[in-house]
Image (cartoon, rainbow, N blue to C red; front, side, top):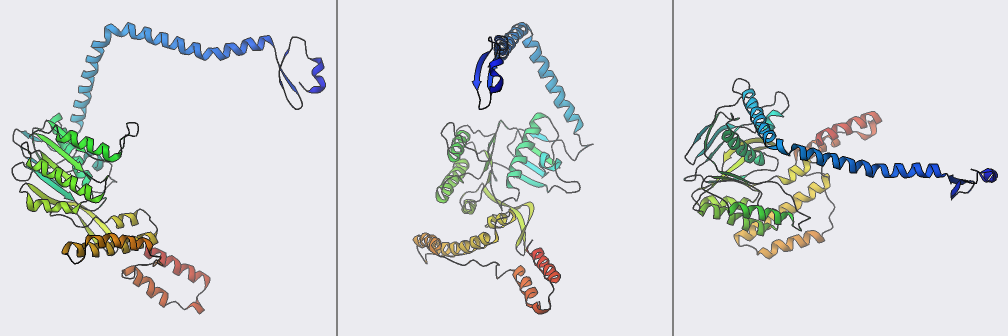
Length: 398
């Protein structure tokens, strides 16, 4: 009510708030209605809880049959899925389970990734062979994004599907009876428990090592990456060595970027090196995603950073630092310089104030751009032609 009319307000009205140009009032009836609305939500929750507890009490006698029926429906659902995915409808085969120790997969594929591929794009299948007597541990190296983790996961999935009674996505699958599938894949922390990513990784790895058996399948991905390089290599090496020397001799796939672990093949008879192949085309890398014997010596991390859209100046600087570190690293290994020199190189790189090159002077792209620029007659170039030339150069950088 405005100040001009507040003297007309009934006596039973109660002033609640004074504003600049008016007064706010409330009546006893409105106050009572407000209290009803405010308390309604609490009453609703109380009634809902009472009804829910009453329902639970009435269902006590039916819990056992409901659970039994739920299990039956779950089995029927899985069996229906098995019938739907048969060799008649998809490229899958019946696995052979045996009591030996060998795991042999021919032309195996990841069922989820294969299903989600764009139409017409084939899945690159791979062979996997693990045998505690000859090839117990595979050290798997290769570039980032090449498919190492997918290989680990598809091996676990095919093994699990075979034990469920399902057909599997492989041309041939001879799978030994497996009691446990252990995985250490991915990176996560436990902030509420005060555990870092590396601590979680070590806890999970310790649990694996303490619970293995001769029929276990172990999948390890990037063990040791959560700490310093030398610590990580030492831990990863000792884990592989421990698994090899264990009396259980569990079958193990060990994916890593530590190329130093390739030396394990020369020291332990049942550790073999494999890598996921790739092809370099100019300044680009093509992932062939095919498993081949032998270790990889390059992770192509800078190539992947470039593919992710990192600034060209950053990529150029990374290549420059990598060349100097690799040069001094090789010299240190051969005894030409001390390991301290490698550390000194890093300090020098941090102190240098360099003008970064826009292009890599050794690349084909740089040569193509240089030729275009040299052949341009600036005095005769129209604005439209300049834009077209700029677009041509931009196309070369993609």
